[in-house]
Image (cartoon, rainbow, N blue to C red; front, side, top):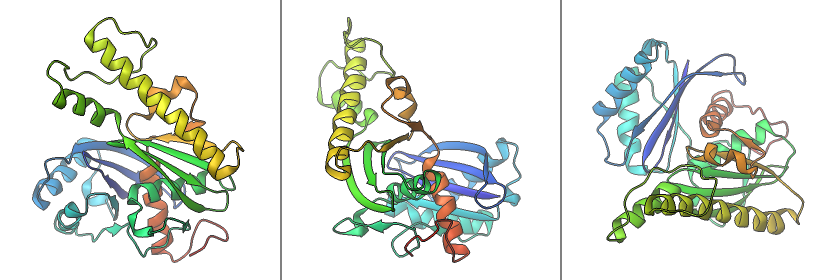
Length: 271
């Protein structure tokens, strides 16, 4: 079994996978707050506990792969994996094989989660131009060509971050549940906040997808994938061709295979 971890600015998202390479099935998934930081012992105990509570023997974990946009927690995570699983994790970072050609001016600036998403999407939907929208702490947009050029994208504040900013910087606006809305008109402060967050984000996504389509693909419609914790909220809006919540974890698995076996699932992919 393989433990795949995505370490974001506010949460660790993890999953346990089992099965032949390229056909792994997720047995369990979990999330943990990462905003306050943690020691290697704290996260190690948590990982063993949450795996066990999902009915899985932690000793069955044979490989661990992780990507992180929070560099300062990598040391603790690596220590946790070594101490509590006796495994040195594979870390998706600069210098590893990805099967992508990174066209960013400085490739080192691209978040590991964005790379993992792009790796997975390129394998799942080969030979297609794509826009990947990841709705997490930030909402990120990535443009990837049919021949696996990672072109770049856009970043905006995520739904929860936007809500927290309103709560923190205003006197009377409360924290609210982030939820899908059927009407833009709110008739209470809570409803107005919820509709504003929802339709404001929806409008931003539509505009950015439209502009990336024009700029990157000459107006030819790309395949649009939604992922991340809030992607499911917008399924009824039909802005995504597919919603894949665990895209980043699948990208980790593919990167692990590519770098462990020294070969790629991508025929003709640039190493």
